[in-house]
Image (cartoon, rainbow over all chains, first blue to last red):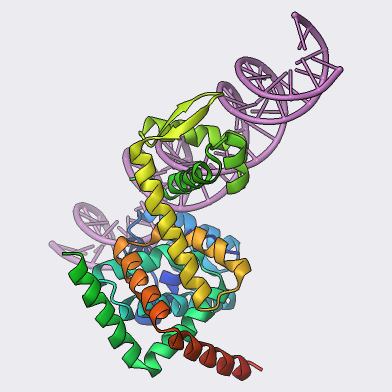
Length: 142
Length: 142
DNA sequence: TTATTTTGTTATACGATACAAAAATTATAT
DNA sequence: ATATAATTTTTGTATCGTATAACAAAATAA
């Protein structure tokens, strides 16, 4: 099992490859706001553990194991972003919060959240009601 | 600002004091599933940072700062438990998941989740609909 | 091609957290 | 009151992820 930090890297690497076709150390470092040396170290670890193949100074590719995990990590991340957005969390908080919690939820919870998001999508009225409650609470706090 | 780990300790200490009147090192260690030596070290740190007053071999009490934070941490924990329970996460996963995520949510997210829980309480029908979706999805997975 | 800039790597150190074993303190039982 | 047990503390060690600084390689410009 990858650690939370390893998951961060795999997720970002998967996304970078998906979007740009490759993932360079400097890109990964920038996305995760860490130093390039930290990236090199982690990438070596991920290589050892079979999530990717790393050729130093040249680049890296995900193994099938890495790709599979990366895909589910991105799905999970997007799902959580969707939920927070739906319930009205401010954009500026969404990424950080998801980043924090995504590694700490069981797949049971993720699946239940999936159901919840589906419910909201099928019944947008519910979110309208939620807005109503929020406005009411808003007033009470003044 | 306390780190996630510090929050864990403050929360458990607050709860222990609330429930039993005092919090001993061994109790804290047991609740958090760490070794007593780790508790001692953290408690010393929490003392230095003004969350509690610690007299070695004797005991500890929360400062007003510690109490205030402890209270909000317990509220947050309970709210998250409530949400996961409502959406049908299995009991055996709830505590661990909450334990993992509680330290990583902004108060914006917590407040929005508060609204959501309130909505569910006021309109239990929504949760019935959710159950419906879950049963449907259940079948699809067979 | 050679010099320069950019990018990536290594070695080392640090901060936070935890464990294990030994030492110290306190509590309990006789 | 003293021996024993239970609890707590100290010390040393380990792990994990990150940062700094010195170095190496590759890309780019002249």
